Length: 364
Image (cartoon, rainbow, N blue to C red; front, side, top):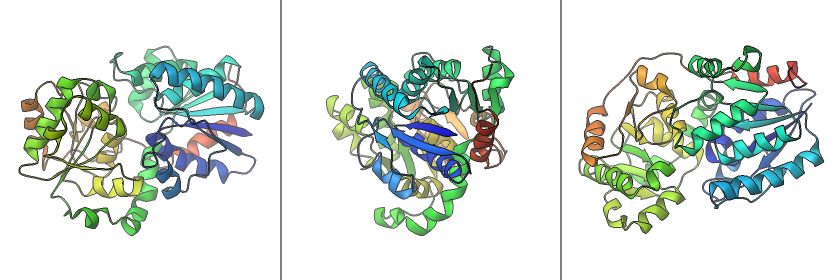
C-alpha cells in the first residue's frame, strides 16, 4: 500500500512525525511525503524536520506566502500532478490548513481515497479560514480519524455515516509522550533565555482573526505588556504577527513583551511544560498546555477543543478589550483543572495505520 502524506505547516509536521514513523515501520506500506511549502521559513519548517527526524520530503512544492486563494489554487494544481505520477492508494491530510484542503480536493477530484487526521473539530465560527477547511475536508474525505468523542458527535450531527468515522485519539498526544524526554535532554532554551520554571508566561499569537485586526492585536499586546510588568512574558514571534505589528505601528507597544524568533518543537515543549501559564490563539498549543498540565488562556471567542474548557484547563479571553484579557490572564496564573484522559491512550498513530490497512479501497 502506498500512502501520500500532505503537510505544510508546523502543527502538521509534528503530527506527521509520529504517523510517518509508524507507517514506515509497517510491513507492506510505503509513504510518499509531500511538503506544500506553506510554512517556508527555516524556523517554521526545516527545524521541525531536523529535530523530529521526519523523513526528507519526496516533494517540496515551495508554495507559500500568498493569499488563501492563491495558495490553495497553486497547491491544487501541483498536488494533482504528483498524484498522477505516484498513484497512491490513499492520501493522508492533517488538520485544518490550506494544505489540508488542497490535498483533499486534489485527491477526491480524481477519485483517490482521502483520510483526514484530526477530523470532526468545530469552532462553529465560519469566519475562521480553518473552520471552512475543516468542514470541507471532512465532507470530502473517505476516512475520518477523530481525536475525541466530541469530534465524533460533530461528524454524526452533520450526517457522516459511522463507517467513515474512527475514534483514534490525538496524534499530538502521541508526540507529547514520545518527545518529552528528548526535549529534556536536548533543549537548553530556558538557560539560553535565563528563565526559571513557573516564573514566566508563554504566549503565541498567529491567527488571522487576531493579526488582521488592528484593534484585537492592540488589545492583546497591551494586555501582555501590562502582565509583563510583574512577570516575564515570552513570545516566539510568528512571521505573520511580526508583519502585522510593523504595519500597524505597534512595535513600541510590543516591546514590553520578550519577543524571540520562532523556536523548534523541542524548545517549544520545554517552554510550554515549564511555564506558569500559556496564552495563545493556537489550537495545537491549547492541547499541548493540557498535556503538560499548564493552565491556558485562549485569545479567541471560541475553541474547537471544548473539552479543555469543560475540564477547567482552558479559559476563553476574546481580545476585544485589553482590560478583559489582562484580567483573565491574572486570574489564570496558578489555576488547575481536572486530570482527565481526553485525548486517547497515546497510540493514535498505530490505530490510524491499522484502519488504513483494513480499508485499502474507497469505502462504499
